[in-house]
Amino acid sequence: MKFRLATPNDSHLPYYSHSIAEAISTCPKWGLIRYKQRKYFKSNYRAMALDAGSAMHEVFAAFRLWQLYRIQGLEDHFKFHGRRLFNADLNEGEGRFERSFKPRTDPRDELLAFCFEILNSGSFYDDPSDSIRTMSNMENTTIRYCDTMLAIADRNPIWVRDVNDPTALVGIELAFDMVIDDEIRYIGTVDGLSERTEGIRLEENKTASRLDEAWRDSFQVKFQPTGYTVAARLLTGRTDIEKTKIIGVKLKQTRSMEDMLSFEVYRDNDAIRNWYNFIRYIHRLTLEFERNPLDAPQFTHSCNRYSRPCGFIDLCSASPDDQLAMYESMEETPLSPSEEAILNGKAVT
Image (cartoon, rainbow, N blue to C red; front, side, top):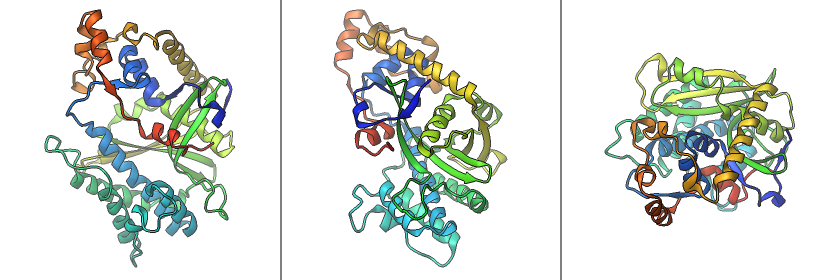
């Protein structure tokens, strides 16, 4: 196993993210067409879970920024990285970040106002067909998240590479691009890094409609924290990182114990090897079928993912000639946030 951060000379290498690799393993035919060939059938259906999750991740980033300023006293870092995350142009005078943050005398009021402004100034909007993922519900979730995390913020400082250099890396929304064995790129975004007495810990935020023991137990083996552990070691230069704190919140608060759930998972070198073998397997599968994705295996156990029919059912059930015609008529898939960060040169290298 060999890992390193990518350089501009690695731009020709094929890349995977956790979402791409997991999609290919779920159904090779769907995953390769949807994520490697970047083709899909455009419909009026909004991916509400993704839209709401993206909006809430901006809130989580806003909280960490505020903590960097008000709890850790790093105002210049707060301003620089606020512009990095919320302004398209670091040189603009009055961008989204500046419009969203206004000093207030009460710390909690200031924090909530900042997070609300970030949430409401984003691209999310309500859909009449979805009563769970609404702006009102997300505002309530923001209050729950901020109150819970504010109570422990002084014990979980954001990792900062250099307190004297505002442009240095901080543990907030770090897009990464790393290389495996000099032939495969792996990309993603680390939500947070905290500097604790026992060492650096990853923080991974999740939004969900339910938070129960089954959801919690799945993270004992999920590959996302494993791959991100390798990335965090490369980003920080610390080889002893093993812990990830999973922070889950419901998008619709129910005033129950399951509204917010946080816990730690551990990833040692054996877990990293298992993840490495998985990525190598996905890469071999991709090499075999990427030129002819219509011939890739179709795993019919996933045709009803998340209680919704797969958008490729008509394609997969058609004759070979019709499949080819349908494939050629498909539209280009939009880039994911991590892919956009890589293509826009915003990944840490």
